[in-house]
View 1 (cartoon, rainbow, N blue to C red):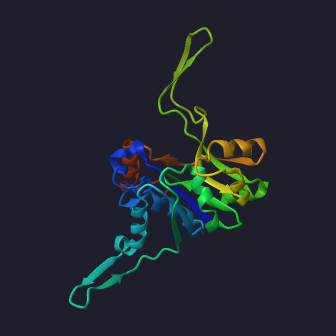
View 2: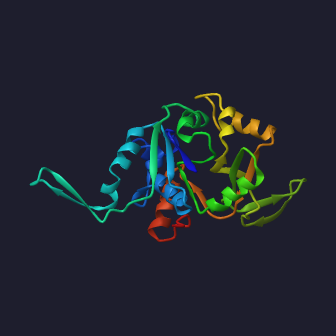
View 3: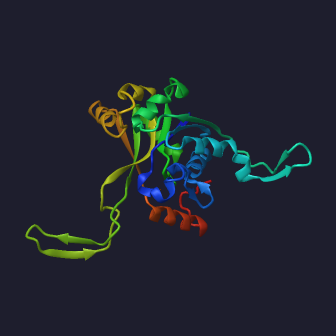
Length: 257
């Protein structure tokens, strides 16, 4: 089963980094967040990736073209016709197709554009800016067990501050710490789709999260898989720094490999 990763947006909320590279290529530790996401899928045996690129898509292509340079020791032998020797190759089992899906294409439109690479089969899909310890195997089992077109993983992001409880008459009844019960379930990515999804997407202007999702809900074809482990997006520089710190301290909760 192929894994589609949406990696074409501008990443304007983390412009300190995305000014120079696509958001999925911003590093956690010394490797792009895109690599961390792919390592998670690969751990569960999914190694065929389609990257929906757009903004600065050449950076993604060049990074994969030079993957050995980033992961291996290299000898450049200028005396012998500029021979390059790669030592101790760190080989991934991946097949990676990077597709230029347009600069301003919406998320649904990007998926529509890679239809020929997916073929007539089910596929997984996620965003290129968040990491999680989600069990991909259990997610797929859940999807297959219900027979619907789409499964969307959800996460209770909760509150990040203490909570004040107020009664109807305006009286404050309690102060307490945040709880996992506070907040709403959000779409965390890590989705599974049957090929029928393509019929719900009109074209480049279609955002996956809007009309296609609404139609799937109306047709009773969208499932929600609740993830109760770790998930963190990287929308801001502060969130990048948080993930960096977790990785550098050996506390990267998403590192299942």
